[in-house]
Length: 174
Image (cartoon, rainbow, N blue to C red; front, side, top):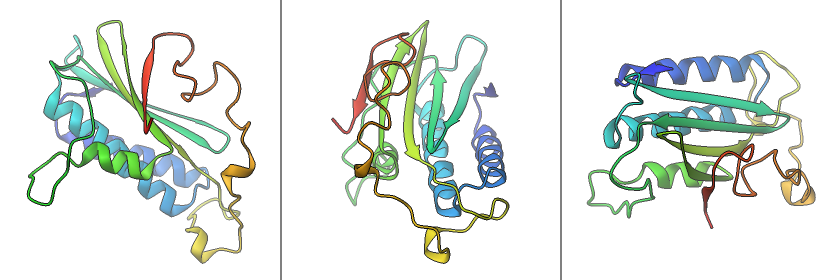
């Protein structure tokens, strides 16, 4: 739980980055995850109410090579959606960035909270501490299309539309 305040973006980003680096995730993936969590928190701060506690909830869970990122807030009058993000617009690019960097993202409504989630792949480097990007490594990152059943378990992922059978979720890209 973090305050519904701009300082929470840096706090969450720093903690997420340090945990992923310590677990040996490639630097480029750590960067992508940090951008995603920053965008999700920034959107919650800009467009939604805090949770009844006056805070936002930021969660991440790593299962194998899959990282789930979630930010929950008190909801808003509108549904989170990707905006047009035109060159002349001052905003509206956040969820487009999340969509580009992640395997998918979505929105879940439950218990007076709105949760925006994103999933991305987090292959590990061989080096552990101070992980480097695959371009600077001899490690081969497998093509995920070769593993179609990676997330087949019915209650283990976001791709089936629910998480732990709690609430329906909309996933993007559709």
